[in-house]
Length: 191
Image (cartoon, rainbow, N blue to C red; front, side, top):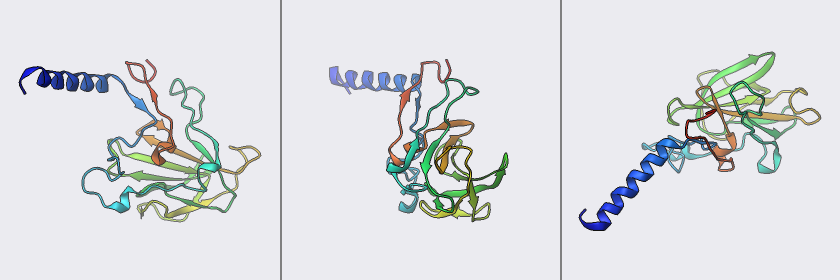
């Protein structure tokens, strides 16, 4: 690397590295998963698949609306139209880590190993789980059935689908390439 072109490549790489270190991106939770969703380290093609938990893109009733502060109001997931009794599927390969009641409502949680640190988790409610905790699932595998619950979507029946990395909520539609990305301030979220 001699001459101006070598210096230009080094400078471009340094600028890019600094920019990536200073700017956080929310709504692109697949960080840690390769572009094909495989986890980037020899995971099988089966792990690369994604699936709509119910329906498809036409069934989105309400999108992810992150709160301005962690304690503030917002919509920490996506509402998908579905009728009580509908089969609910895992959005990506993982392991069922919770299936039970939270605040009187049935919830299923699937952790997605190989998706980064800490691993991503998808949540599904109100869903009565049909698999025991510890069960490995593939994308599109049925994990439960939608329970009747008129509290979240009002006049509509729906599945509330969430995505978290640690305690931070992300846009679950990003798993399917349909999420929104937004740049955070230089100091990170809430700065």
